[in-house]
Image (tube, rainbow, N blue to C red):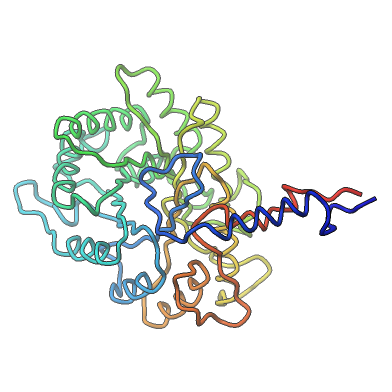
Length: 373
């Protein structure tokens, strides 16, 4: 009996044809703003903060790694502390110009409302909507997405006790204001942060329960408040990227729990964006400082897991770059992510093939075409 692995078998021929088709897909930059779950495109992004040290090193790393998206943490209170004062645009203007020069789309993550834009229940809807109008008019082509107050399920992220209904009311007001001004931007809802037992604060809400609260509020409020993209942040993942989700620890595959709640609430057509993740502090079984080899392998595997999920539209890696030495270290670890990066890779490192999900299919061909005894 002919084996399925034989060159003459129909399954082997189908697999070979599949690989040929995949190889013909052009390598183009990805615009994730129109991504839906039935597309094979995936947006690679990286994250920076306007307050981040060694900004020149950060930009140096980003420029060499060819990401599609740049996510910028915008601490509102630091750049517009007084309502009647002129906002401080210099740093943000510089980053926006950099992104435009590199042909990168920008997602702005708005954090830390100033005192004049914050009430007892959280950020004030009208003031927040006015900020978005100002930003979209100032950066009409580069600013493609906005993440509203990442970590809203935490006291730190929301600025007071988290309240899903208040968040949905904020969304509703923003949508109305943008429509009245004929402005459009993709709103990333949440940027939910899984709670770690050692680092959660009093008043913080489990991210999965908070997401359920968002959908409940959405269903009971008058009018339409779309939530097409749910954001998820994984600031302190542990273990290997393929490790299954756990209620005790934060892992990369925590997105599976988010997705299940989306499905339970009839949100199959909506997507998840992982708006921030980084390396574990220490890799399993590897005491001491992480090595470049460990970081490279972990990052490649993490992106393989994330990008193979058709319902995830983009993922933003947050490198730790606080000195010249660490920027060089990070650059070598990131080189494997993109075929547009210099071909001078460390020996033994393999690169992720492309920004198209289909390119990951050969890794999963044993699943698509299982062997039979």
